[in-house]
Amino acid sequence: MMSVQVLDMKVSVPRFGQGPGVPIPVGLISTMPTDNKYDIAPGFFQADVGIYADPLPPNNRIVLNAVIGVIGTSANGQIIVKLFKSLDPVEIGVEIADTRIGFETNAEAYYTIELQIADFNTTSQFNVYNLTAELEPIEKAGASVIGPISLTGVAYGPVL
Image 1 (cartoon, rainbow, N blue to C red):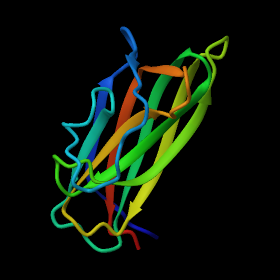
Image 2: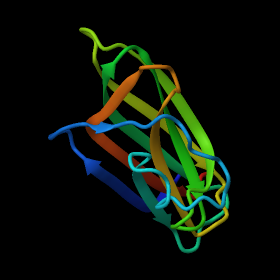
Image 3: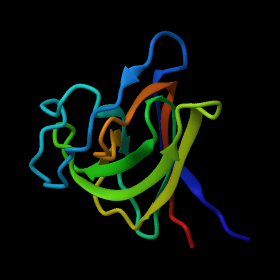
Image 4: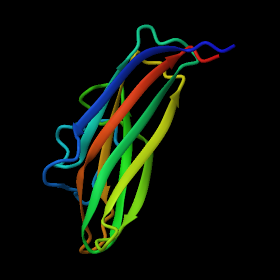
């Protein structure tokens, strides 16, 4: 029988699906670990969670689940959703996962993008994960985040 302990859980829900959409900017997010997430252009930084486990045992995992609701506003294009990891709450960190979805602006205008990942054997006691959305630079394409936006992180350990 396998025993696993939940060490920490955080949920970020900055937008739940009401109100006007937030335009998704054309992709400019760098993967340089020195990027300050608060200096990135408006609309890039969507949600974050900080997972803290003291001490973080070996054979651990942090399971992340992200959801972003979007709408195509002009032309057809692609949206890229990225997940970044940092050991510093101010830096955007390094990209650890991404997914993309094509969108249209006709009858199929509403989309829900999901991204799930497990981060194994994390050595730091504090890990910050940032969820972003950016538009593939295609001429005249436009999209907005309409909600929901959510990012959930759960730290498990030890996983034997």
